[in-house]
Image 1 (cartoon, one colour):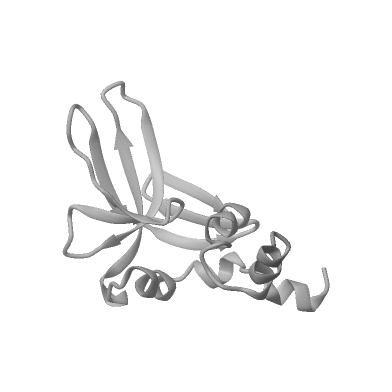
Image 2 (cartoon, one colour):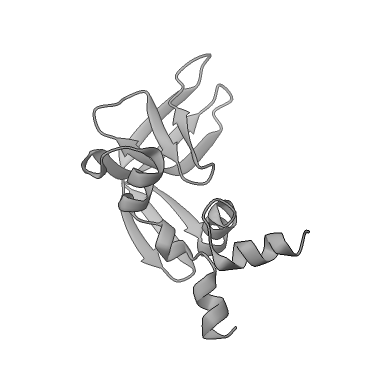
Length: 131
């Protein structure tokens, strides 16, 4: 891929910052922290989600992969707990760690979620091919 094409696409490194999510969700950056959200359902199945918690708000968090505010649900036998996490760029993506819990998000996962939500020349070219 030549330099012009590479610079025209949205890259995960441009997305994965608290500044990006503060602007995207209209929340002050100083209130945001990287997090892991651990949910356990009534069947004891556990799901770990990489997200962003909003300090001072116990009811919602930003779900990075679904690009939305998501409520923390503690109903019908489900229990959701959030932990402030460390966030590191690693080969192929990003790793979130909080105690014994961890979650890896690949660059491809992040780019596939956000590539059509942020203007880029590559997105414009792709849309032009549909006309």
